[in-house]
Amino acid sequence: MNEDEYKRRLEGVGWDLVMALQKRLTWEHGRFKGDLQSSIEFHITPSLGLQIIMEDYGEYIEFGTPNPTTPDEILDWVQKKIIPNLKRKPKSPKVALRIATSLAAHISKWGTVPYSFIRTTMKEDLPGILKSNGLK
Figure 1 (cartoon, rainbow, N blue to C red):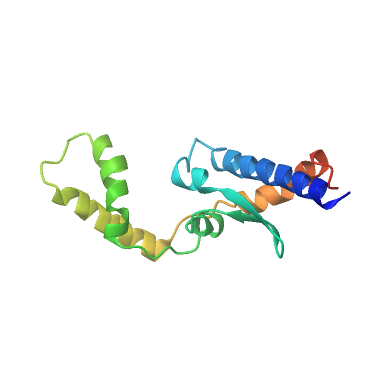
Figure 2 (spheres, one colour):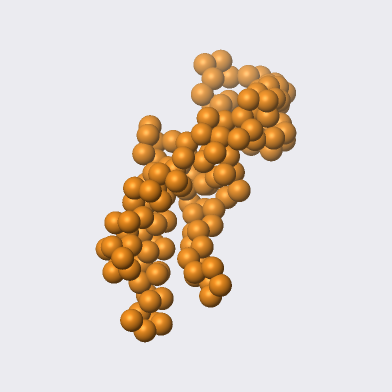
């Protein structure tokens, strides 16, 4: 197999792996849609071969490690996801900040529950992806 053929097959593996990771993120209850799912990309480099890239917080979802965060970092998310779903709409904009402060303290102290989408994809899907692209 020449270098161009190998690169073409490696690109096929990259696209299939990205799609498998995105599918794994929405496997249960449609969770993790959005920023993390759409941030997954791949690059082919001469030194590393195939490199998968995604948002930094993918690590916290994968391993469930404590995620040090501040209220300012999650305030937009609270305003988009929590405030519209409250039964009684708050009259003060300070409510979102109070919720963000409480949520940030909880996440910083207890962290997030691990959801190993990367390791599971590599273990279960990668062998089939390699085989379907003629690399194993």
